[in-house]
Amino acid sequence: MSSSIGLSPEIVDALRHLKERREINTVILRHTYTPGALALDSEGNLTHDELMRALPTDEARLVVHELAFATQEGARRHEHLLILWVPSGVSTTEEQSYADDYSSLKEFLTEVHIHLSARRTEQLDYRQLVAQATG
Image (cartoon, rainbow, N blue to C red; front, side, top):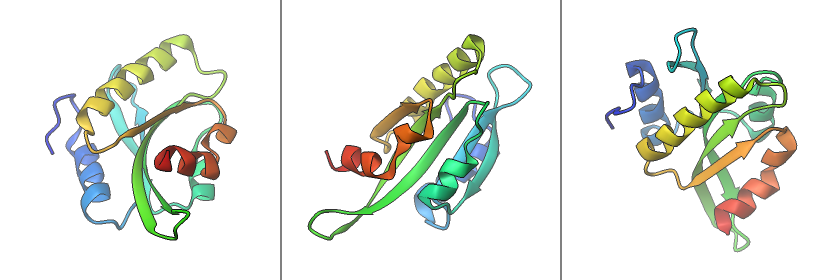
């Protein structure tokens, strides 16, 4: 995994860690004070509820999360999600900047096939995420 979009080595390592080691299931990225630069906000092994609490109510974030679930047949599955989190109140400029990075991450993270944008945590309801992963 090499970065063609200017991700820091720290972010590339966190994304590699998420993909290869399974010790973490979530990487949250935020903008730094340098325009167009992303920083690692956090990484961890978060439940769905913990992920919802980790999303700030007034700032945008980019999230790569491994969703664990069981199919209707009982088979265990995991799907990676890329989430653009833009709660109400985020400036248009900030939203556009995150949207640009979201588009770049979609190209960079070729193994992630579920891409979501959300403004409210209700839009990231666990059952809705599972439905998207199985649909």
